[in-house]
Length: 211
Image 1 (tube, rainbow, N blue to C red):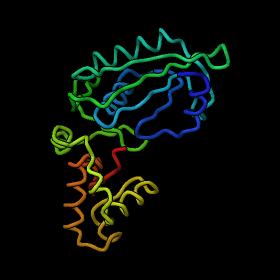
Image 2 (tube, rainbow, N blue to C red; image 1 turned 180 degrees about the vertical axis):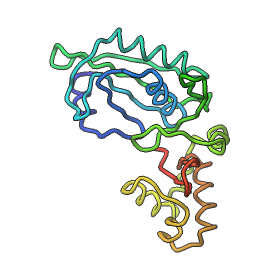
Image 3 (cartoon, rainbow, N blue to C red; image 1 turned 90 degrees about the horizontal axis):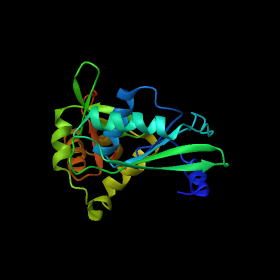
Image 4 (tube, rainbow, N blue to C red; image 1 turned 90 degrees about the vertical axis):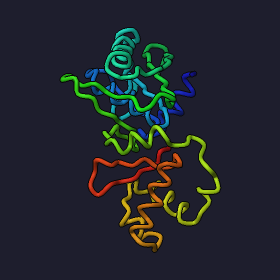
């Protein structure tokens, strides 16, 4: 990646596939982020970037050591990642970690007490999911059927989620004028089709776009 490409990337907000960190200060939190990217659609983690997206720079070796430890020791199975660095204005180094969507999901995160949890990436957050979503992660199809996406109800749903980020079955039913039962079934089928993620630990259950 070039400095020019980095500047273009910094115009984007944090999202399902992008997160900024000024530095890695908590190995357990960064393990959640890495696992969530792997369990969802992959993504990029940029280290050396402040919350306001100003470039602080970082120590490449120090931050990469912490990230590697988290990805190998606090995530099971370990997360595969690659990295590169960019010199920003000649003297500030930005570390760019790339995580691909995994073929071994779900990846579990191990906390300080040894408790295991599974995280997915929902918009700009890494959120825990229940066993229901584990089954979905194992069975979902990464090849999205464009015919499904072209359906009027699905197009309305995607348009809504681009603006509002989350939806439940009741609100979806109102949006497209169908029964709540039918809305729930459609949301579940879209989850298995790889279009949505189901945040099943929340009540009512929420759905977000996978990408």
